[in-house]
Picture (cartoon, rainbow, N blue to C red):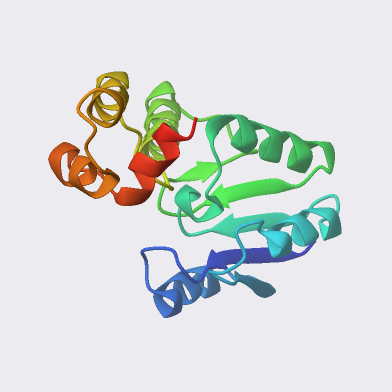
Amino acid sequence: MAIYGYVQSNHPGKLLEQIKVLMTQKCDSVVIEDENDSSQTKLSDLITKIQAGDKLITVDVKVLNLNIESFIKFLSDLERRQATFVSVNDRFDSRLAYSLKDNLKLFNKLSALSKKSKEGKSEIKETGRPKIDESKIKEINYLYNDKKMNMRQIAEMCDVALGTVHKYLNK
């Protein structure tokens, strides 16, 4: 029966503090995930290495950086291998029956993490040229065809780049 600790170097808790907490849990070895590895290869390797009776310990469930669905799959994988998962700060132990209150706290923490992930995705900045609306395109064509203005004047008047004027006149 081996006891493995798992930490991520980019987790808000300081790395050394996480390792100290795991050492109080009598971990046989501690796996440190590199902050640049978003695919969590060391965690995946550790899960495949775990055998029946082994225990995986983290300081906080957030260290796993899993959404709710992935966390459930993670627990199922460990259960199938007859191993247990413990989160020290969350007082979570997958082999013990625990109260509804503890379940709700953990669920709340996981949903907050999931919510932050979704918010981060929604804040992704669009790249490329900014789009201009249809009325601006009509104005460019009107000024060029009817008012016989040159492209530079149109660009200044419509507050767009010269390349944008050229683009929409040649469509």
